[in-house]
Picture 1 (cartoon, one colour):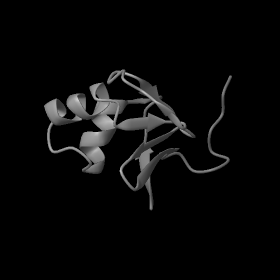
Picture 2 (spheres, rainbow, N blue to C red):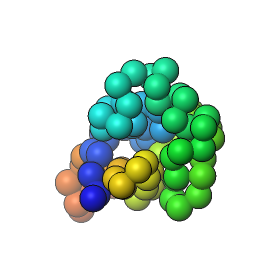
Picture 3 (cartoon, rainbow, N blue to C red):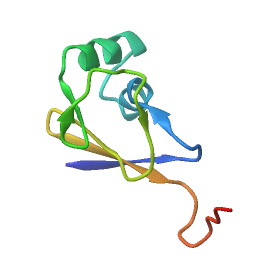
Length: 80
């Protein structure tokens, strides 16, 4: 199952994503999941709870993939 996590900032930290998505009930629980190596980021085990995830990044926990997407509308983003 894939769950899309929309952000309207440049990035979301891994522990915050897990808490926001409901994979962890608290920040402390999210920290433990990450430190225990139970979370994959872009297919690799990640033990940094402060890892910055940007649109296009994917975090996996158990049977769910959390894909970070930008809340900005397609074609509405302009980078200078």
